Image (cartoon, rainbow over all chains, first blue to last red; front, side, top):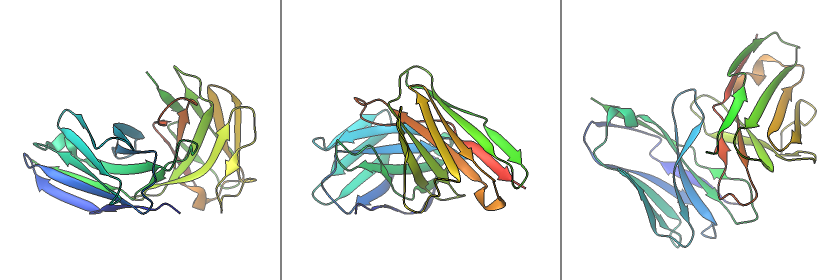
Length: 113
Length: 115
């Protein structure tokens, strides 16, 4: 059974710092991995999706990497801003025929001005 | 594109009443919709998966008679919480997907408070 873990559960950093959020999964046979952002009381917004054949994806100040063999993904946020404060969730799609996503517990990120 | 809406955004009801939550895909046809439940400061818990025109598949431990799911069209799924009790108070989020899509698109969520 696929399990997804995110460390740390919470992170607080000053504005302007670069930071890394971690996601690990127990079964390396995945179809894709996705990072989401969730603001308090809101739904999920997709940030980056990495296919199993890819090593990384970039969007603006965000960069997500994937190392399937070690069961790890990282989300790198450059030059953090207070507006980046949110909960970040990673989710794994186990295989193409699996419609369900397996979510991690999330990392609550606070960027202090 | 790929916008999913939910209605209502929040609802307060009395214990014992039933509440219906709608999930709509606004600009695409969703062959599959998912319903999640989220407790404060916790991750999403998948409750059920529904495919248009067929019965929903519930996750283990989710009472199908309490959480009725209907996916009658390619743009609408509903979740009815029957005989709601305070312990059903939670944040409910739906998502939708088309067969060729690589991911799910999430609605903004519905906060349910049962008094």
